[in-house]
Every structure is written in C-alpha cells, then in structure tokens.
Image 1 (cartoon, rainbow, N blue to C red):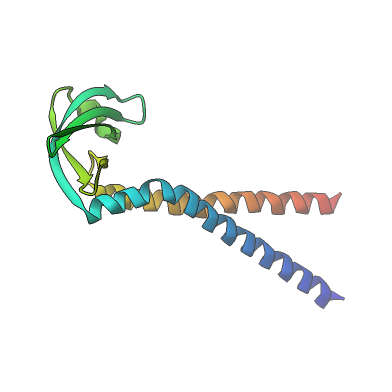
Image 2: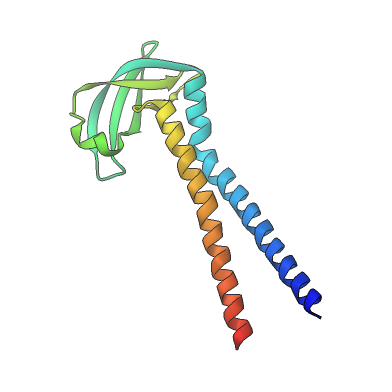
Length: 147
C-alpha cells in the first residue's frame, strides 16, 4: 500500500515538473520574442550614427524621443535610456545603434548590454513565475486534502 502512495506522489511531482518546464518554456518564448530578436538584428547588422534627443519622457520607462539620419532619411524613435534618462539633455547628440537592414530597429544603449539584460530578465521571469504558480497550486492541493 505504501508503494502505491509513493508512486502516486512521484507521478504528481513529475506532473508538476513537466507543468513548470512547459510554462517556463512558453513564457520565455513569448516574452523573449519581443526584444531579443530586435537586439540580435542590431548586433548582427550594427551601424552607429549620431542622433539628437528631441524630448525626454523619463516618467515613461526612462525614455526619450530621438531622431537620426541614415542615407539622408530621418528616422524618429522612442529610445529607452533607463536610469540615464535624467542626464539626457534635449538637443544633445547621442550615439544611436541601428540595424543596417532596417534602421527602424534602433537603440540608444549598447545593444550587447541590452541583450544581456533582456536575456537575464526573461530567464528570471520564465523560471520564477511558473514556479510560484505551481507552488501555490501544491499548497492549495495540500490544504484541500486536509479538509
């Protein structure tokens, strides 16, 4: 009888592990598909030009509106400066990293640093959020078995 209970617990733990792995993978693919491909494109086809800070919106995720020229075409974008936003000065010249195949894909921050931080954030989120959900589920299951 005890072996049957042990097998049931083992199967339940395996199911939790599979659920965690599945949710983690799905979350990583969804969240990671937003900025990681863009940063990889900038890194692969990187060009750097000078741009100009047009407006600051530090309250909006540390962002600023900028403009830059590529082949006599002016591009405008909302760039994230993070904690450095308050130090950005309207009218100042800054470096803009862009994808030479699509200048609309651009960044005011070093794309390698941004990619590293993005991968780290996605990994932490993909590992911890599903784990939290599953631990809550386990706890609820334990409480319902006691009653």
